[in-house]
Image 1 (cartoon, helix red, strand yellow):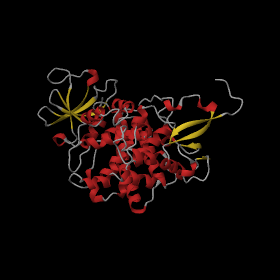
Image 2 (cartoon, helix red, strand yellow):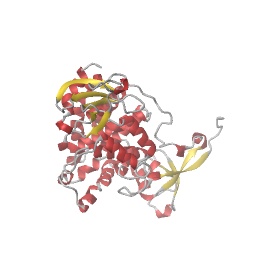
Image 3 (spheres, one colour):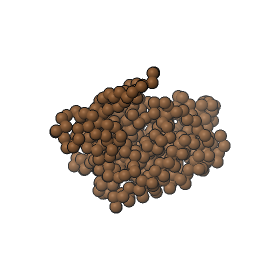
Image 4 (cartoon, helix red, strand yellow):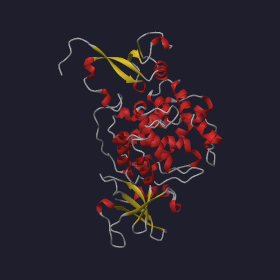
Length: 412
């Protein structure tokens, strides 16, 4: 393309959910006189201005230099997302990374709980603490994308909100890696994941911890948490601005059936579409006081059935490819009757993982060993191992953290 000799400006129509700081708004979707804006045409310099536009309008027109817009921007998932995908490779084996991050994961759980407790008690958000937790997760996932995901299967029912937030952060970073995000984008999506449910600090604890199904009125109270999350984050300086939109929009659905606003696909921010899938998946596989979690396979099936109605099909395809049909850390029963833990899946099909066998065909503990379905390992029945079915967390009383050392110590 020839280099421009002078600056020529054009107007571009933009959904308010795709606006960001620094853009110049030249026109609104309504007369200026019907709004509270003082100036007819202004640059977005503050988060307050950004969110005033989102509250007032559905779309606006932004001014941009013509030579900067030779790419059709509406074809991109989000203006903040790199057009060029980065291909990552695991730098170290999963056993080494598990050994490296096992204590760090526990610390991250404690840090996340402390972050939410501080907001609950004082309204203060410790941005440096948030960024440190996310940075550590990004570093680990760039070294090996399965280790932290494996550790997310270790769950504590008594601290669900904090651990769920950390798990969504980890899944989001790992999916961002699968999507080819740059490192800064991995940091941003991680912050969005960690803070997506921050509004729940304003929901009564007895409601969050209720042992029975919620009543209709209680559901309405629970569905206020995206609004609370937006209000909490919009007033905080130093936090990634996109986290505000994700906290507000992660329960919106493509067909408009979500909440709190019931907006449809074109108005839902790209990062919110990512977090929506991950948040739903982790919720489905988690035990609740009133229900048992699904298997990872059933959760993937359920979400996939809702592609293009509730969830973005393209993002969902990448998520299922990344998580695999059998997620790291999940339990499976083999055709031999033996039971094992998925260690990692490193193949295009996503159905031939490495597995740590822990129970024999009689469902009693056995000497652990690792098998690799990709290599066609043979069972004691002299037939190739095949996964018979996926199991829920805790099946046969298994606590997967008990076997962490075995994965680290048993050679490949």
